[in-house]
Image 1 (cartoon, rainbow over the protein chains, first blue to last red):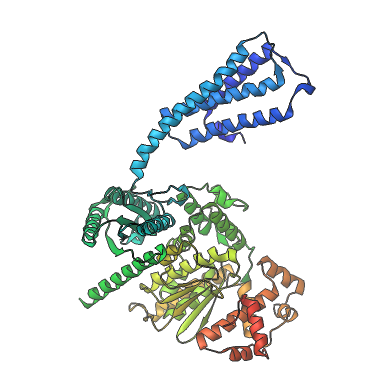
Image 2 (cartoon, rainbow over the protein chains, first blue to last red):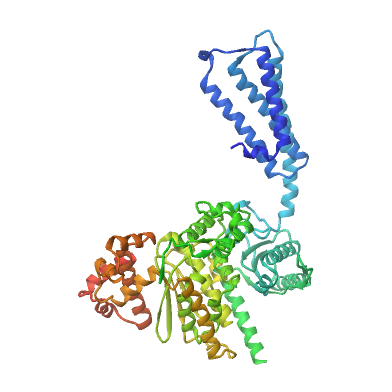
Amino acid sequence: MLKPFFYYPRHFLLVLIMAIACLAFFMLSGNFKAHSEIQVIDVIGEGLACLLTLLWIYLILKSRPRGYVTRYFYWGLTFVFLALWMDVLDEFIAIPKTLVWDDLLESFTTPIGFIVLTIAMVNWHKEQLVLSRKLQTKEHVFRDHRLFDAITPLADAQYFKQQLQHEINQRHHSAKNIHLMMINIKDLSAINREFGFDTGNQVLSVIAQTISLNIRPCDLVCRLAGDKFILMLLDLADAQVEIMARELQKCIQSQIFYTHQDFQKFNIDCHYTISEVQQDSPATEIQKLYKQMKHQQIIKLRTRMSV
Amino acid sequence: MSYQNDQLILPTYLAPALLIDLAEMYGVNPNRILKGTPVFIEGLISVNQCVSVEQLIHMIRNLHESIVHPEVQFLFGQRYIETLTHPALNAIAYSQNIKEAIQRYVEFHIYLSPWLTPVAYYSDHKIILFWLNSQERHATSLVISAMTAVRTILLNSTQEELKMNYHFVGAEPEFIEQFWEHLGENIQFNSLVNAIQIDIQECTQKQNYQTSAMRQAYYHQAKVLQQQSGLEQSFLQEVHHFLIRNIHQAPNLEECAEYFQISIASFKRRLNKHNTSYQQMLDQARLFTSIQLKTLFAYNDEQVADYLNINDIHNFRRAFKRWSNVVVS
C-alpha cells in the first residue's frame, strides 16, 4: 500500500518531515487526552481526509509533467495536508489554551494551502487552454480519455462516431455539409513484417500527426482501425475536399521514415476515399466508405491485370 | 493420442510472449497478464517452459480484462500467425486447394490457434468451420482471435481474399469497424453458432509453383512433429467425432465412456476439465450436424429430423430450440 509513495521519495520525505515536526511540537507542548475524550468519528473523518490528500499529491506527481503548475499543486496540497494532520493530532493531544501558536498555525496553513491551490488551478486552466488549441484537430466537442487510441495520439472510431452523430444532429438546424475521408496506409503489414511491429506502430503515430497538422482546426481526424484513418470535414465543397485529400496524400508520401536499429530508409504510400454524409447513422456512413475503398481496390486490380 | 486442457504443451515463447508484447504495446503491466498462472516474466523465453491450454485461455482473459481497446482481440489472432514459424503453416500454404488447407488447419490447430478447438464440415461448394464450446458469451473474444488467425493463414497462403462469411452468436458490438477491417464485410451477428462459411466456387486453385512432392513433404514434416509431441487430437475433438459418427443413435454417456475405455467417472472428470459435460457435447454435435445439413446440403427440417433419428418434427423443433436457444426457422 505504501509502495506508490516510494516513487517520489524526495517529495514525500519532505511531507513526512513536516508531519513529524508537527507531531513533535504537539507532544512537547501538549498532553495526551484520556480515552474517553477521543472522538472516534472525528479521528476517522479527519484521518481519512489526511490520507486522501496524500493520495492526491501522489496522483498529481504521477500524472503531471514537472513544472511550476505541478509545483504549486504540490505545495498547496502539502499545506492542506498539514492543516488536516494538525486536526488529527488535536484529537489525541490537548494543547493548553495559553499557547497561541497552535491556533495560529492551524488557522494559517489552511488558507495558505487553499490560496496556493487556487493559483495552481488558475495556471492549470491557462495551460489547458493552450493544450486544447493543440488538440483541436484531434478532439472536437467532447473530451473522453477512455476513447483515445493506444497506438496513435488520436481518438478511436467510437469517439469519431459520437462526434459525427453530434454533427449530424446539428446539421438538422443548419445547412452544413459534412464530408468523410478515409485514408488507408498501403502495405503496413509488409512494414510490420520487415521492420517489426514497433516500427509499424511508429509509422501510424507519425502519420497521425502529419494528418492532424495538415487539416483545419475545425476538422477532426481519428484512427478508425488497423491501417485506416478517418476524417470529418465540415462545410467544404466536393472539389475542395478532393484538393485536401490530394495534398494529404502528398504529405504522407513525402514523409521519410528510418528504422531504429539499422537506419534503413523507407517511404509510405496511401489511398483515400471520400464521401458526403447523407444518412443519419455514423456506422452506415463509415461502412459506405469501406465499400467504396474496396470497390476502388478491385477496379485498380482489374486495370493492373488487364495491362 | 489426444491431449488434455491441463497438459503443459504450449511453449511460453509463442502465444504467452505475444500476449506480453501486446500488453506492453497498450501500456499494461505484463505481470497482469500472467496473474493466476505459474509463469513469470523472467522464464517466458525459456525454451523448455510450457503452459496448458487452460492457462493460455486464462492469460487471454487477463489481457481482455486489462485492455479495453477491442482491436487487441483481432491483433492477437493476426500477429500469432504472422510471428509463427512452424511447418504446419507451410503444410497449409502448399495444400492442393482450400478444402485441404482447412483440413490441415483443423488437424494442426494446436499450433495455429491453440486457444479453441475447430471442427469443419465440407460439401462440394462450401466449407463450414465451427469451434467447440465457443457458444458462451465470454468465449466471443477467443472466437474473434481464432477467426482472425484463420483469415491470416488463408490470406498468406492463397495471396487473395476468399469469400468468407463470419457468423457470431452475440449482438452487433459498437466496434463493428474492427470486424470490417480485420475480417471483411461479410459479418453476421445474432447467428445460431460462431462459424466461418467459405465458398469454394469462388476460390481459385492454388499457386502454380507448388508441386505434389512439396505438398506431401511439408504435410509429412508437420505430421511427424505432431506425432512426436503426441498432440494429434484434442480430447474434445475425439469425443465430438465419436458423437458425429454415431449421431443417428445418439449414444449415451456409458457407451461413450466405454468407447474411450475409461470409467464413467473419469470420462465426466475429463470433460469437466474442458469446462463441458456429456450432454453439452451431444447437444453441440446435434446442433452442428443440423446446421451443416441445412447450410451445405439444403436439408429441410423433416430431413434433418430424420437424419438425427428424431421421430416427430415438433420434437426436433423443440430440441433445436434447446440446443441453440432460438426458434428454428
